[in-house]
Length: 340
Image (cartoon, rainbow, N blue to C red; front, side, top):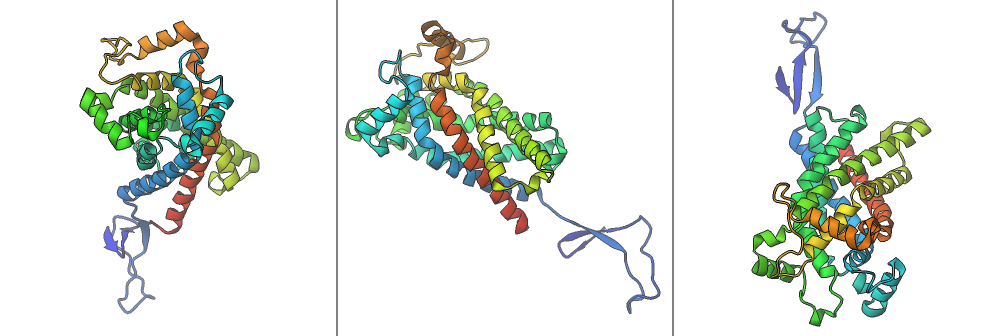
């Protein structure tokens, strides 16, 4: 093996290269094949940058829907809003368009990184399985890669969503709100609860993220392959419309398998500072009060209560994830075309 012009050069056999009488003045020619070197770090950077861009798209498109979802999740007994349309109307009447984007500073500064972590972990998991081409992996393998991405992401997204949710349920004007912004919310949370307060609801976050991303990536890849098979083309040749459709359906699949966990997580995270949690944790499972909160929701609102706010969540999931996956795929294609 020799190094030649940034490529790895291999002799066709273990024997010395043949001497060809008809060849150059050197009177010999080495028959070689070249293999382009693709460093693992370049794959990671592709996934990281593409995931960052996808996260920006998801945040811009999806945050207003997320605000409505969180407000519906955290009200008790429909005391404030009668439903999704009423929440939309009241938010606009009292706070204007700005009300839909409350708390966006936290996710917009962090969600791109969160998605970078997700897509990087997903790509790394696929490489751990041993293959680079998505089409060589089975759907169960891709589901497993998605589950790993969700687990890794839990430790990043948990604190981010805690800050976001606390800001989203502030209904007063900024001058009379408890938290003035993401940094102020983070500072006050640490002051009253310590660092561990930032990670409140972490068990619930893991319970949500693992099945969420397993379902999202599994559904997305299944849809892409189904459309490609129907059209009789390779998956890599799918049009943007097909990627948008697959991404949107993948987003819905994500929430179908994780929404009740998300509702419980949100309720755990928005509990008032300086007070003991009203939900007793299970010491054996170390669930942070997850199952106690779950039982309380079912006791007071029935199983239907676990799905409160699901409509705006799904309404957000399709366009936000469609935009995110399309952005990711276009970025990946651009990197491939530039040999990055």
